[in-house]
Length: 309
Length: 313
Image 1 (cartoon, rainbow over the protein chains, first blue to last red):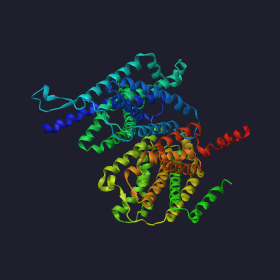
Image 2 (spheres, rainbow over the protein chains, first blue to last red):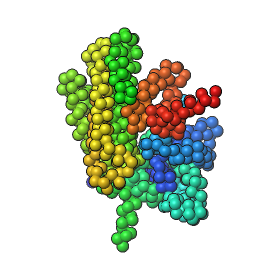
Image 3 (cartoon, rainbow over the protein chains, first blue to last red):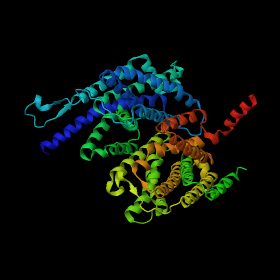
Image 4 (cartoon, rainbow over the protein chains, first blue to last red):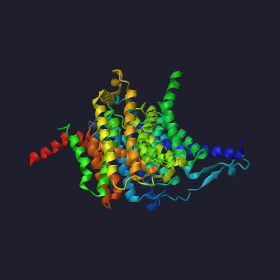
């Protein structure tokens, strides 16, 4: 293995982990909604797209930094999520229908409307927020002159990754230490038992949907400095978040984090060694492999390890 | 009356070209019937067997590419794609079923959705096999007029309708409905659920493949973005059935009629054209909340609504 090959490999791994951290945040939003509501939110990526456009507008109109716009976009997405859950998804949960997957189809409809509205408002052009630190990076050789390989660490990617980790830590604190968080987890584990223990299940569902939307909204703002946006970007992220949740184990938060990292690494490796166009296929190869070999996802592996002891 | 209605509709449709409509009207009629076929195919799997597929574009596209590649690679008529797609789509569906049918409910839905996307990406990237984004063009059209295309798709539709009806009224149909209502209960009654779900998937896929192969020959041009489209094929397929009525014989027919006409009307109004996904999305949301079993399934509900109004007036 020559130094160049090693450099490429290490660089690929680094970008894979950075991407994985952001993927984990997207997956977390999906997994908590799935855990509590038992439905798959197929408008997840479109919600992220909405947050990205909020950040884009704030940047181009008021020059607000995309990272600062999290403080506006995430609460806005929380409200949007609450609204969708209250006025569209809840009524459908009560309706009797032949096809049981009504709610999933409903979220598809919501996603279609959001993506199309974005097309009408912003046209289908690719847009970017040209932040001035967009291309800044740290180089290993600047700090260690005689390093055998030269690696770089992009500034926006690193900041996004760090913020994603902080938000994840905040979410962990919220879910394990606060009353509301504990109620959400109780609802996810056993809805009826939670109801009997005096948890307001209906309220928890609304909060969870809002929270999941806010998380993916934050992820959208983190993607903005390093990515471009277009109205149909949502679909691909919906699929990514679904693959992550399958990979991690449905409804498992730890699983979503691990799943996000694995997917980020894998995509980065396929992009480097097979070709950019094939990266999305790599994503689905993982998906299919997980379904066949570890249907419970990473979470089931963790659990069986624990029981083994 | 109910048993005669399909024959009356069929007779009217057979006579339709005799009225000498413009080729635009015939084009719309062909599209409506093609969507009927796809809708009936989806209905067999989704409506009766309860396996909601979000990836019927995969089967449609494989059928379309079977026809297209027979023409572009082997140089024979694209119409051979219709018999050839029976074999190819069945094999494809068996592979997909092996992976996806172990999933239930929404997970099956999403697995099929990703199958559709995988197929699009594969078709885009295997440039030397499929022609990539350039697609496949059939240079010489079989017929200039629309009449023969119309009769071919009408024949496919009539056969599909009969097949679906025969399947649903046979033992097989009861197994399908049992699986939809409660898979565990069906399993415990000794129904081999995996086998019957696979049968439903294969039949549904093959019929959708027919529609795809027909599409290639009719339109003369396919590319991955068109035939493996998520919104414009997979989701519209679901909408055709949801609007018309899942698990009804007439549902997909009514649904296809409404959806194609609606799409055409929206497209013809200049300012509304770009918003057609929004309108479809809103229609889908409204249907799911107010008419969850579609126009045919909830017909009693609609009649009651109008009856009540008439009573009040």
